Length: 71
Image (cartoon, rainbow, N blue to C red; front, side, top):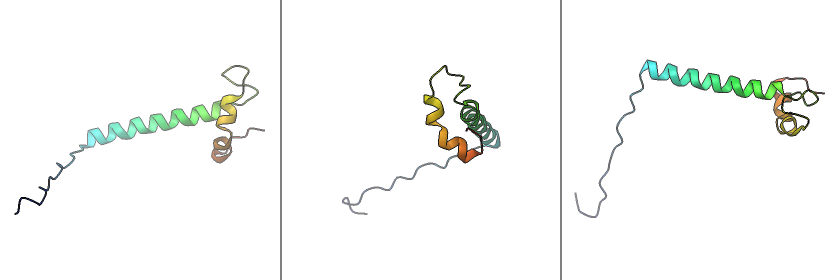
C-alpha cells in the first residue's frame, strides 16, 4: 500500500435488538397517531385553537387526503 492511498475505514455494524426495534416502532406509531389526531381534530368552525383558522388551512389538503370531511 502506498502512502498516497487513503486508508479505508469501515463503520461498525449497527446492532439493533428486538427490544430496541419494538421501542422505535411504538414511538413512531404514537407520533403518527398524534399527527393524525392533530390533522383530524381541527374542523375550522369548531377549531380547538380559538377563532382563527390558520391550523385548519395549514392541514386542509391533508384532511382531504386522509378522508376527513371538512366542508
